[in-house]
Image (cartoon, rainbow, N blue to C red; front, side, top):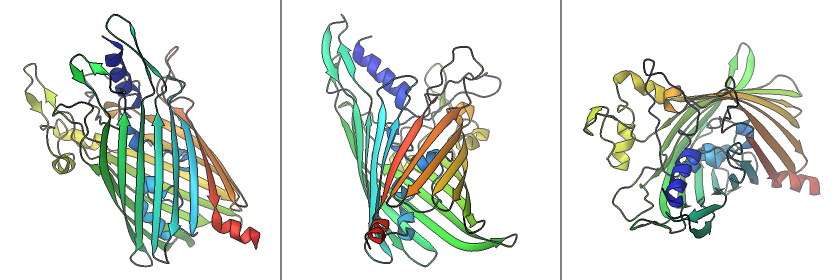
Amino acid sequence: MNQLKRLFTLVLLVITLHSFAQIQVEDNKFRLNTITTSVPFLIISPDAKAGGMGDVGVASTPDAMSMHWNPAKYAFVKNDVGFSLCYTPWLKSLVPDINLSYLTGYTRLDENQVLGFSLRYFTLGEINFTDANNNPLGSFNPNEFSLDGAYALKLSQRFSTGVALRYVYSNLTGGQQVGTLATKAAHTVAGDISGYYTKEVRLAGQKMDWAMGLNISNIGAKVSYTETVDKDFIPTNLRIGSSLATDLDEYNQLALEFNVNKLLVPTPPIYNEDGEIVSGKDPDVSVISGIFQSFSDAPYNDREVRELIYSTGVEYWYDQQFAVRSGFFYEHPSKGDRQFFTLGAGVRYNVFGLDFSYLIPLQGRDEVNAVNPLSNTLRFALTFDFSELEQVDN
């Protein structure tokens, strides 16, 4: 196998979110059947704050990172202008030079309308190409990026909606040749539809801010890295969740959030030796058909619930200046087996905010010399509050 073919294999193993977990599954318990897509970097969480809370965010307090989780939240953001810069060394236990960078921000148009933007850049480091005889063909830095814009509108004092448009570009091969087949960069356009509802409630005599959020992201055309008619789905994704936040007293605040996540793309069916489908449905369908089919196409009727991903997190603030966070993320073993705890912290000082998070995987901990690709994952984020700057200047 030449170097280019090995690159495709590496890409599938390294950047496909539902393929990199170390999974050992007994056939008499359940069948391994992960859902894979192209450009999975679109659903890697770049947010250090949410990263410390088990990757929750669809119903959390609105901030600059709302673009990734739920653009509708922008309508309820407190400040007029803000932005955040995030950096994540990704899968560094496997490869040292893969990283994700993310710049996002917003500006308020009026009391009810907010515009958001983001730029996401994912690099897979340097790849050295060789032919079948191991002769060098040069090197290349595979990379992917997306450029997003969003519009959020407050429809009432409690509810807002948001839409986002996204251009996606993925260049994994640098135009290298695979046999007689030329490769190319893949690109597409996708969109998000989202909603956010917030209300003040009382539980056990305690005043709380309750919120619900929903975001269907990456609704877009399939992509291909060659001129063939075969194309792959991008990670169209449904995320829904709820949060509760309360002031314990003048200085102490606490927030809890729970999210459920599901990929809205066809599940791979089970084939027999003749290539015929024996369970599940044909995945060769349109994007819209794939979204609806994803709710009922898992092989065997009792497997659909296994495609749900659960995450929950808690955040504690002292005097709105220091925060500590923790969370848990669960994916069924037959669908990728990502299971991990997270820890995080944050600090706010005048115009600046700094957040970081650390991921603790559960897989591979009992095996000798086992290395989990998610081990030692760190995320960093720097935020800047222009409204606070104006107050300081005054």
